Image 1 (cartoon, one colour):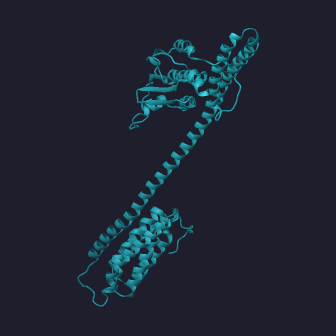
Image 2 (cartoon, helix red, strand yellow):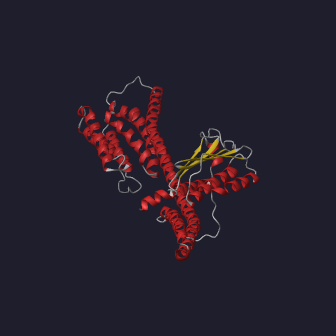
Length: 423
């Protein structure tokens, strides 16, 4: 019974093929004492069945063909059932678990056909040929039918059960592979989206920094020109101008170092916000219908222009997300805490309640539906990028009922420290 479809080069690894061969050898050794009690046909059948087991995963089609050859040889020689006949179960299992579509259904046909043939062989042919010289006069047709029924039920139950077990293993494996491919595709898609969002956010930050650097250079140029003219008429004013030039230049240099290696230059036209504009931002959000509870604690420390923009934009994005995805009938807390290290921002809001879509949904599925979505993921990526480029960090926590954004932005280096470093 040759295979009906060509067998591709083995995809089975060398280690697994070696394992199958070793297990088939151990099976042959276990069955050898029983085969030696018979004749040469039993030894040949043992070799064929063991060979079928050895290649059952490498080529299920050929394994099934070899098993059929061994079974036919055994029946033609009118040999009794032996322990090595158990190899058929492993072969049928492999046709369903590892074979192609044709081999899989040939395995099922072999299980059913094998049960019929085994029943006829054991119940009729074997009895007739073995007992032809001395027939049993007490036997009758009813007993023969009962015997055939029992043999058929037992044979088909065992053979089809082996094939069904292989089919179940195949279904589980295929389902796992499908989930793995879907997860990989999802990760690749999210990575592509994240890279796109990061690139867009970097371009926006580059536009922000254009105004910062342009303003700093304008101040430096004006002070330098003033100091040059004052050096002749009012020498006492020159040190103050130079002090201003040094402070502005150090601040601009810090901002340039922050983004020079990562951002492309893109000119922006809109004026950039600073921390003093937070009050106006909060009022706009309140006008839009968001109940913002703003508290500020600690003494403010100097922040560079780029760092102030980062704080402002993070708060702006967090409040916008609360307005779009949160429960607008509940208050939103905005906390701005200052310490010697810099500014710590926390924006917390309650999530909009969303009923689970289906029974048995995973815990937190409703919260994910309320806080999820592409726009929110993009906004979080942008906030995180701003915080990291400013030398800080950002974390997002959704505990099922509340959505909390926390960011820490470090303080700018003091002018005095910069002067000492420059010295």
